[in-house]
Image (cartoon, rainbow, N blue to C red; front, side, top):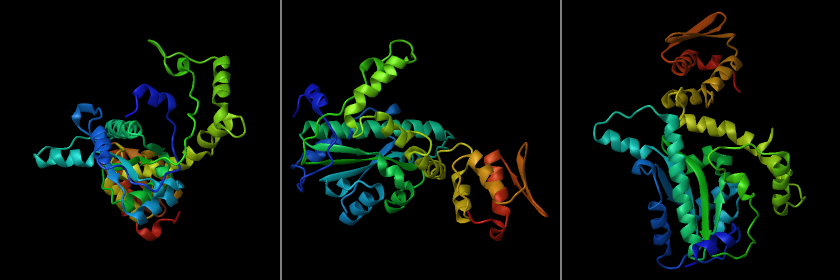
Length: 316
């Protein structure tokens, strides 16, 4: 077992694995670490799906563009999960509360803590790991392939296996940029420039900005992930304005939305010339017809759209 300080001083993500299984007993150890991770209110709002089917592994590797998912000894899908908790509350006759964004917050936290504990134990035992954020590239097909119910969504994947490479640790930002004292402080130009200098070694071009812009600037990877992620999270019950059962019905009519704002945009895109909100109801109009929905804004608008015949909905 590696010394913890040494582990963090030398660790790096591994993407090449030997075709070897974990040693006997080690799977139990890494799963124990995951289960002993901190969790808010001891609610354990996460689930790990251990993917052992080679065909499914191959599909996930293809969907996420991460070939090492198929070659690692173990691959886990790390899920934010309030489905189990909701079932337990209902089992005892309780009424599930309406706290979708708070649920997402704590479920993601629980999932990341469990995955991090699993990863640390695996590395301490001498294995290599790779955290896979690319599950968001295909959140809908992955969720279908793994039969995820409402109240559950993928946070990340995690590869664990016997390393077939020894990558050098990647640089990190200077401590004063990520550790503040008492108050958050803004950064000066010199500090920002120093950050680019410190992170230069991880790039081929020598310019970390090219990496950041590819992911985080306008038109980058994160923008492309946002729409499907919002729509899936809302359909799974994590948006306070849009009841998931109505979103499923809207999806059957070709309307996908992950927020009330997106639903309004979708309504106007369908050719409805106006959307009128009044206390407790919504009217949508497309001459010579109008449709009404009752309830809170998101629910009312969804009901109004569902009243419109499917042939009135313009394919997107």
